[in-house]
Image 1 (cartoon, helix red, strand yellow):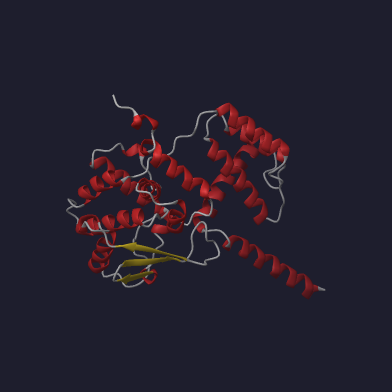
Image 2 (tube, helix red, strand yellow):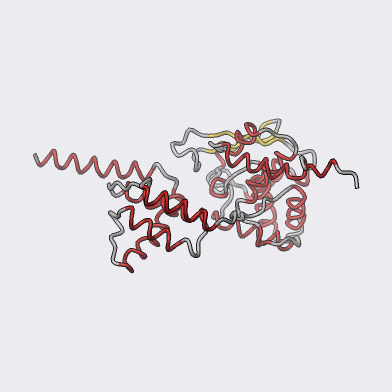
Length: 304
């Protein structure tokens, strides 16, 4: 009997490990930070944070709605659900008291949430021109390669800083980079992205990446020795130096910039998704819609 109990305990521990491994580390940290906020709300108001109940979540969301974005509310629900699952508890986040409250909050907020701007080609060139003037060669080569590869590969910043030397394969047409694990590929099937040589060598991501590897003598492990937060700070730094409003840009601006820029020149959603790894067409269609605001504008037909 004792052996059976021990085996069950081992299985529980192993199962918990598997559940944790199913999520990227950055995602788990985000869930934990979100749940910490929910837990603080519960402690302050005398509620149990785990296991909790739908009514408590609904109250928490109403509390958040006065000072948070709608996207934050959706993420907090997901975080509460995941943490409960990791702890072996079930919580019905589809309960009417939660879903109807969320719908009411969405209508109340009304205004479309504004996201950070994509870095489009002209602004990308301005940023690279500033980096080319960097006196510190280590910063110049690394930051130039990081920003150009991030843009050309449509990488999330967490994916960008996770690229390892072993993931890179230079070929005659350009470079192939294999993502071994990403937000949309938790089980590690892998996604290989092909980045061709650009005609303009100044802004070519392949040439920049090769130069950085040669300069740094990296032959194993991570290519960019920075955190994902540093990617965002680097973009903001050089955007400001280039005369751009850096408050409008973030780490995601490289990825959204790739999708919007390629949509502007006529790339279809399937080819964009093949590069970005999006599983749903919803976000990609938003990029295409943004790109076509002026391209397919009815006012273009007016002759004034």
